[in-house]
Image 1 (cartoon, rainbow, N blue to C red):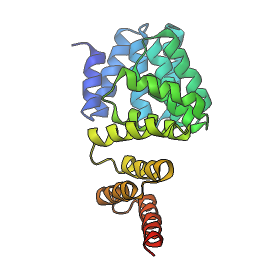
Image 2 (cartoon, rainbow, N blue to C red):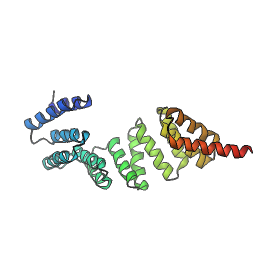
Image 3 (spheres, rainbow, N blue to C red):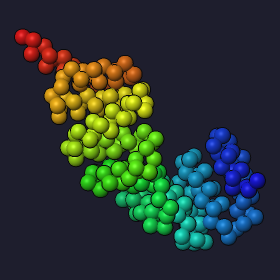
Image 4 (cartoon, one colour):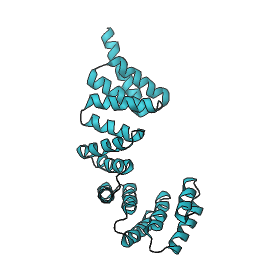
Amino acid sequence: MDKNLQGIEFLQKGNVEKAIQMFTEAIEENPHDAVGYVNFANVLISVGELERAEQFLKRAIDIDEKASAAFYSYGNLFFNKERYDKAAGMFEKALAIGPETNDLQYMLGMCFVNLGRNELSLPYLQRSVELNGQDVEARFQYALSLARSEVYDEAIKQLENVVKANSNHADAYYNLGVAYLAHHEDVEKALHCFNKALEIQPNHALAANGKKLVENLLEEEGQ
């Protein structure tokens, strides 16, 4: 089996030491192949050795300036450093080279979420969901972006799909509660959602606050 594939298998199993060994051998056997350098960098990123990882990614790009995987990994590196503008630039380069993937669109969207540029995050998160409808976290983030854009009915629809796919998603239930309360003024549905969030995660402070608010509203209505 190819050393890079073996390394990826070891990494997926959590055996970082063996993964490094395989990627090192891959680089030694094919020093002009960018793939080995990218894989080694990914291992280093996973263990937090970002500065060292950057050297491997620079080498990969020197070898192949069209190495989309190198730019994607570079984007992850900057994202981990919370340098979201730089990360977005790298992800955009990866996207320009191709192929387009839901992960790539998702990471671009999350860069703009962290930069406070919701209008830019929305299309990337939407495209991520279009490319992989099974990605629950992408759908959740897309729903939040819709809510921030005040597209509440679609946000509710997406959040309902999230809890349908993952019935233990406390944050999705919390945000559904907020949407029902703020947009539809439906206190009964909001209370149900806050209770579901707390059932899943008893220490969910925001859901607890939401529940208290709704109970106060119901108490006032009853007076």
